[in-house]
Amino acid sequence: RTLLHSELAGDQVIVVSNREPYIHEMTSGGIAVRRPASGLVTAVEAVMRACSGTWIAHGSGSADRDVVDRNDRVPVPPANPSYTLRRVWLTKEEEEGYYYGFANEGLWPLCHIAHVRPVFRSGDWDQYVQVNQRFADAVIKEARTDDPVVLVQDYHFALLPRMVREALPKATIITFWHIPWPNPESFGICPWREEILEGLLGSTILGFHTPFHRKNFLETVDRYLETRIESEASTISYGGKLTQVEHYPISIAWPEDAQTDGESAADCRIAIRQELGLGAEHLLGIGVDRLDYTKGIIERFQAVERMLERHPEMIGRFVFVQIAAPSRSSLDEYQNFEARVRNLAQRINRRFEDGSYRPIVLKAQHHDQDELQRYYCAADVCLVTSLHDGMNLVAKEFIAARNDEQGVLILSQFTGAARELHEALIVNPYHIEEGADALYRALSMPRVEQRERMRSMRALVKDFNVYRWAGRMLVDAARLRQRERVMTKIR
Ligand code: G6P
Image (cartoon, rainbow, N blue to C red; front, side, top):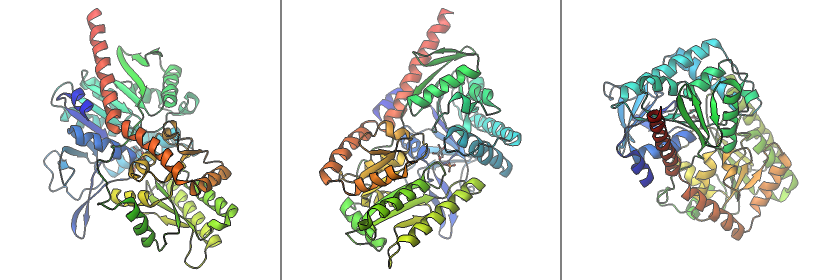
């Protein structure tokens, strides 16, 4: 946090993301504020609380529209405001084309290896361009000086860095791509590949989670644009402008004190088991995801099934709770996926049910952060089995929650987190036997071994927290701006 403050030294910070950090919804009891299920929001929100400024996002909950100011600004967090949320309201047509269409039916499957075919429609692209311009205009309007620090988030805004750069040439634009970047062949099928690359190269800094995604990006630029790439320094010179491309693994804010309302891990363990109708003898597994086809939920259930088949003594003893927040549910692909997940859970439950015992509890609804903390603390094992994932912050949240230094993390090798959390049980989610073995191993792991692994992962996440993530990008941006100034003088 100190690094953040010293780097910013009074600069104006403007964040742009699609998802808003606080959704204001009307309920029978008045306006309620909900936190969305989004790793991006989890991470960036902590940074914004620390450095204040303005966060521009797509307005998805409009219950407070009559209490905001003229520019649709509202102070957040509601209980203890430390920064400003400014919403951009999209028409239904814009939301369909830009968010559901181009971002989530095009770029999302393009960048994740989950074997879902991307769909590209010209109409969606037109909306994507238009919405990027609307958000860029909001940034420009929000800027109090000609050199604000603009933090652009994710695949919804690939064109915005360049749009802002054209209007505010002195701005420091730090863009972070929260999802994987594919290899040049894969990316090349996008009909607007050049426009996307040019848009991103409006950034001062362009960040990815892993060296591998960074390398894929550099190779993609090399393949499709006429640029000068300094591989050593990871900078790209395009149109007289430098962009530094680096990897900055994202993280979370380390919890300052127990976040479970004073409930200790031991209390949570008992309380959650009681809520589920289980006893102290039950072993509990937990999965926390959006209902998304990239998360490997089907493969995870299959691993549970195989483990029970192989170790019948676990039938009646092991219960797996899957918390699955509904996501992008108006898209066919997501509806079909949800139906497959529900059917599989049902089939496995029928197979092993005995009295009130069901091995899989599927909670396909939104849970707030406090509830998630309680589940993390109560679990013997947490399963993160994404088929492909930029980072996956659930893995880091589980670790941060375990101040009792117990619990085992099973982690897909296809997450960015697997590059850092070596003491997790790393699995290939496509290999169901391996998943089943890892699950059994986790459930039988001695407490001493759990402690050793957890301690080492906790030290890493505590140290490489989200403030470091943001701070490193700011330091690199300052260095690059300095280099640019020197180059301009020499010229
Ligand atoms: C991923 C994306 C984020 C997004 C989140 C939730 O983590 O990288 O940009 O916010 O999923 O998805 P949603 O579409 O609900 O915002």
